[in-house]
Length: 230
Image 1 (tube, rainbow, N blue to C red):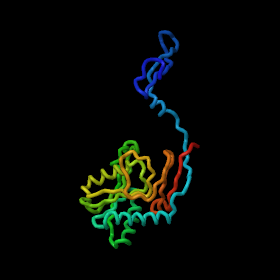
Image 2 (image 1 turned 90 degrees about the vertical axis):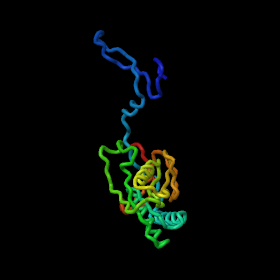
Image 3 (image 1 turned 60 degrees about the vertical axis):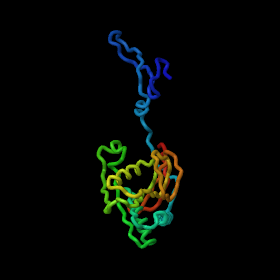
């Protein structure tokens, strides 16, 4: 609470500043309202470094998990009729392709796989970069009345999935949309949950889960890393 005047909001405070008073020829103290949030944003942030804390999944564990997820999807969907997978760019795409390959071994059917780039549907697009980097979407089938399973590597706030659903419903009206993720790390900001989950991991706000796949990263594992001050 400021000692002068009333506080008009939690983000404001009254603080003294020194200003030159020409008539007096010297500096005098005056009280001005300052924005606390702006003042915090102007402070210099300390540099951070990334430290690997633990390996959560090996290549063999990733493969076994995807096999299990493929069986779960087929079972809960009542087969592969009208079923299609939608891989979210980037790592959701190879995961969806691998799950479809596993389904081929279960039902002997090629489940179609689409690729969805959600960049233009992000609610923070203006904050990501001055010019968005677009990757191509490729969904070579109609989505009307289809049983769609969106596939991504990590479920975090839910904002990526919200953007993905907006993109899908721009293409048509699917019968059902469900979500499959390799890792669910919590910290949701949207009312979104995955139906198919490879592994749940409790994390702190500073921790990051990195899914590294051979198709993109030239290695195969899931690691937990943390941001610490240098």
